[in-house]
Structure formats: structure tokens, C-alpha cells
Image (cartoon, rainbow, N blue to C red; front, side, top):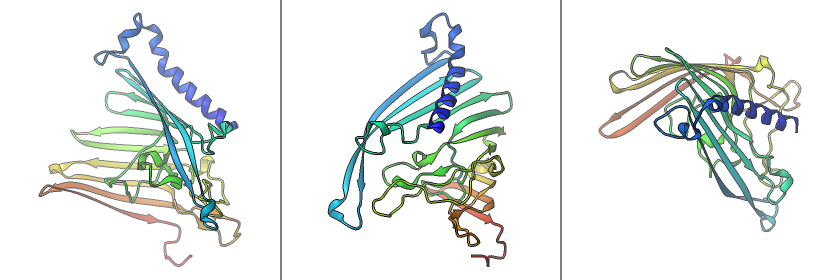
Length: 288
């Protein structure tokens, strides 16, 4: 409950600062035009998600839940700033009205401030690094929700993280990106005790402290029509490992992650390639 109200407060603060410049407008319709700034846009949609719960011990007792979901989007665009927000209400427990907000609440909520030679983004964000197509080797800064890996897109499966991101354009097509996120959030895996439930694995460590922060740097450019990129991340191994000393649960190792990416077109074919090196504390590779 505390986390829920904390997220409400954060999103409300972002929303407040986003719409403050609108209070000085003489004409409300002046910022609704596509040709004038500032501009405020909002949209929303409702949907029903069908969830099949497989009971592996008794297939006939498996059940199907119909989960209502509502998405609300808000975008505020000005000459020197932007705000993008998306919130989702989803009932993960079928017809239980009390659980309406138990799903991921803040999908995204972040500012973007434009300066002469760079711009800064800050808030709850999802970023994708790499040239892959729904499959990436070094896109590691956001946690992934694997409880529905069939019906949702790769971006929708990501969990928004509090981030600060610096973007520096280089030349006509180059970009330097630097990201800092103060915490590390574990991926969410389904358990298979009886049903295909939406639960996290038990972890023996708390990675929500500042000492578990992550940092990433990415440089991309497109010389001669070939997209190239390199990246470095000081982060964690996403796949949890057993703590063999205490055997109390699963943990994650620190890792220096180096990535390389390229994409180009040859004979009408779109070629994408990625490579990554995960430098863990086990440099010799003999520590299971």
C-alpha cells in the first residue's frame, strides 16, 4: 500500500509540473493545435485480457480469467520540454474489484528537457538498447515481466525504472547516451507450484538500495549507411543464481557488460547483429 501511494505521489508531481505552464494560456484551445506550443494530448483505451491458468496436477481444474485493463496516456510537448506519462489499471485476480490496482501502475512517467547541445530525461522510464528485433543481448537496465511473454510486446514486458538519462547528439546521426538508475529491480518469473501464477522468485538480497544502482553508456553512429554502436553497463546479471554459502534463496551477481551492435541493408535484406561480453566476478569460470 505504501508503494502504491508513493507511485501516486510521484506521478501526480510529474503531472502537476507538466501542466503548470498551461495555466498562463489565455485561450485553452491555443495549445491543442498541432502547429503551436505548448500542446497537451491525452488518450486512453480499455481492453480485456484472457489468462489461462494451467493446473498441471489436474488439467480439468484449470481456469480462465477475464482481466479488465485500462490504459491512460498523457503527453505534454513544449519547445524546450516534454512530459510523457502512461498509467495502467489491471485486475490480475479476475473479478475481484479490490485488486483493480494490483497490476503495474506506472508504465512510464518522465520529463525531457531540451538544451542547445544535449537533452536530459528523468523519471520512470523504459529504454531499449541494441539493434535486435524482440531479442537483445545487452539490453539489461530494465527488469522484464515474464508472466505473459506471448501476448505482449517486448516493450510492454519491460518494467519502468527510475532513471536519469543524458542524450548528446554527435554530428548528423551520432548519439551518446548515459543512463543512471539508483536501484536494480529483479525480473518477474511465474512460479509453477500449482498454477501458472504471477509471483517473483524468492531472493536473498535487497537490491533496492542506492549501492545497487546501475550505470550505462552507449555510443551510436551511422557511417556510410551502416549503423554501429558500442555500450558499457555496470549492472547485474539478470538470471538469478543460488547462493551456495547460505542457500537461503536466489541472488544476482554484479557484472561489467560490454555490447556491440550493427545493422545494415544488403541486397534488400535487413541485417541485424549484436554481441555482448558479461564480465562477472568469476573471471576463471570455475565457480558454479
